[in-house]
Image (cartoon, rainbow, N blue to C red; front, side, top):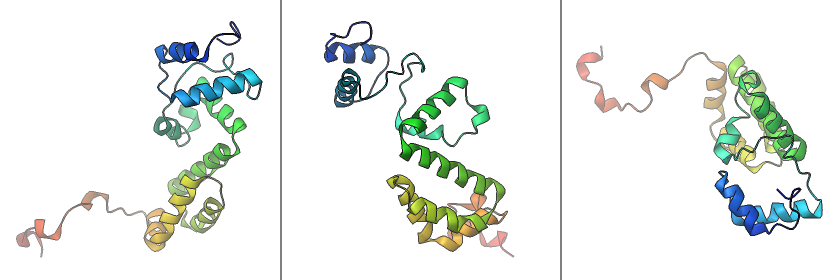
Length: 165
């Protein structure tokens, strides 16, 4: 849009991208248009499809197996990781955590938590801090094959005495 009409008003840019599905903030739009005009960020419209991601949906992309992602989504993730060291670091930590869970390798938990606590990503640090609050249970959950999932939420009072022998 800016390439075609460099004098277009930011308000018009906002209106057009809102029609296309943008639901982000006005401030973010104005800030990015300003950066584009100043040449502080690259215009990647030729490389990436116009898709507006909400943070929860975008964050799930880092957890999904890369083989299940479309070419466009892989390009999106690669672009994010190239543009942001924090996103690249978070992506690596998320994939390591998933691998640890999949492999049931509790021996990796301590090292993972240390790496996460030293990251610049406050959400990852907060998650790691939460893991430390009940480390033994978390470690057992990672390394043991059993799960309390089927009984989660049941109260002892709900079990009839005749069922207990």
